[in-house]
Each structure stands twice: as C-alpha cells, then as structure tokens.
Amino acid sequence: MTDSDKPSSISSPDDAGERVARGRLFVFAGPSGVGKDTLIRELVGRWPFYLSVSATTRQPRPGEVDGRDYIFLTDEEFTTWVEEERFLEWARFSDHRYGTPREAVEQQLAAGVDVLVEIEVQGAMQVKAVAPEAIFIFVEPPSLEELEARLVRRGDTDDMEARLERARVEMEMADEFDHRVVNEVLSDAVAGLLSVVARPEGSQNDQPAD
Image 1 (spheres, rainbow, N blue to C red):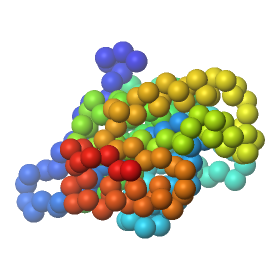
Image 2 (cartoon, rainbow, N blue to C red; image 1 turned 90 degrees about the horizontal axis):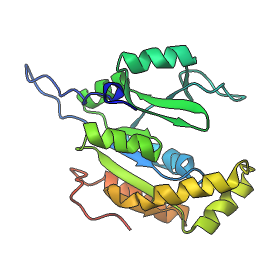
Image 3 (cartoon, helix red, strand yellow; image 1 turned 90 degrees about the vertical axis):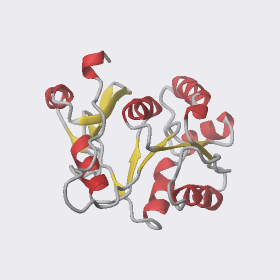
C-alpha cells in the first residue's frame, strides 16, 4: 500500500454542545482457524458491542446476506472506496480484498457505543497507526499443531502449508497487541476477553489477559 492509500485518522467527536462519552474501539485479530468467530458470538451476547461489518470483493457463500455478513463489492467499487478513504483499513487475503468501512465505526464511537472489529493482523497494524488509542486483542491457538487440527476438522485444508506459515508469521507479531488470549478452553478464553472489555478504560497500558 502506498502512502496515498493509507487511511487517515479516526475523527474526534465535536467539542460543541454536550459531549457524549466516546465509545471504545476493540480490534480483534488472530490466525485463521483460531476460533475468532465463535469467541465473537460469545462476546456480543455478553457486552453491548456494535460489530463492524466488513466489505469484501469475494462472492457471497450460500446463506450469506449482503449488509449482514459482509458488504459485497466489486473490484471496481472496492477501489473507489479506497480512493475515497472510506476504509479504516483494508488488506488482501486469499486473492480477495477485505476492508473495514470507516463511517459506521466513527458514528458508533461518537454515539458512545463500543465497537468490535475483527480483521487480519495486517489490517490491525494499519488501525494501530491511525488509532493507537484502540484496544488490540490477539487470539492465539494453544499450538500450531492444534491450529492445524482445527483447520482439518472444519474441512479447511486448501493451501495448508501456506496457512500455517502465515499463522507462524502472525503469531510472531502478537507482542504488538495490548492483550493476548489463548483459545484453548472456550469458557476460559471468553472470561479472559471479558476481563479486558470490562476494564473501565480498556487501557493498552494494562497487562495482557491470561
């Protein structure tokens, strides 16, 4: 991505009039197959998050609904959104592009709502550059062997070596996040995530959750 492609920083709330306490932005990332979707379902049932809906250039899968599961864009539409700086971040993954629409995130934060964004590690680093006040959470597997076993169990075995190599690289970047949670036992991982979310400030200066 060139410097001209980089998203600008998130807008701050207007100082005029009565100020609403600004929501917090939680950025949730980890290797493919680590169980992020399952953890998010557990979290949104326990905390009043706005769950950001990503845009993508891939085709809808059976049962997916535009605007609910993803915002489905053509390559041309996605490029236009990039040029108009309508993404908080965007990245290419498995020959498709994915991005986080900026406007909805800004609106919810300004209204005092906590926002949860699930993105790739590459995208998380983009957000960190423009919104360092966000709370960054890395979800990791107990081991690469267990991650491989989970991918096999869900039938996601295409390009396995490439997926595992990508996971190795992403796990080496875990220290760039404010909090790390190992998804070994689901209930323990959910408790660890809630301990981060429930902190009044969710400060990146806090120690990582176990």
